[in-house]
Image (cartoon, rainbow, N blue to C red; front, side, top):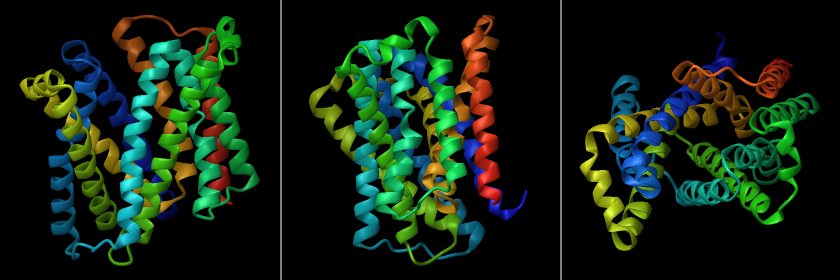
Length: 302
């Protein structure tokens, strides 16, 4: 694979690790609650982020880059936006169920493309815009049965919550890319791992402190479930590492659009575990996602 497509490999690793991590977190959620399982990705992921950074420092021989005020501002914005997106996602899923909420949230690539153009002056090509639209339509079709498509516009409050969640995730992607781009020294790996470690450190402090003060049972439960939490934390850190490296190599819109391959990956994994066949609308949606990804790669080659 040529260097210009290296981001594709890292994005696919990130999406795969995220699917497996979500499965691990689902089991934790049943035992320690939603908030306890959510903070696992940060508290238990942070040590692995430090390990990744140390390994990268040893392997490349490069000095750790020193982030300035702007880089720290970007990474703090990304860390907070990601926590907010997670909270809004849970609210939306509680209000409308997983499928409809997922369709709202995964409007994220469109939002990422718009924010990237506004904040980082990264304007997608017309073909890339077409790819984003096709992939997003595929996600909506796959996640929402035809009989429920009307619910997407039926109640504005849950819709607004879901789209707001996608916007927060989109803003976090833009902010993380901005933080990496703002580092002036070092190669893409050392810069990515530096900002990953800082972001997970901030998220661990913010969410850990909030849970310790507001929901101590959930915090204590996550500590008791340390064996399962370590695995989920590693997968979360691995997924985040893949996203951050991808952000250092191409626009956040490209990364988050290709990252939607996590949906068919999750569906195929669920089918393998449950033995249930995929519905017709799911196959049709996945076909659109595949076509959109092909368009995206074609646009990137031009």
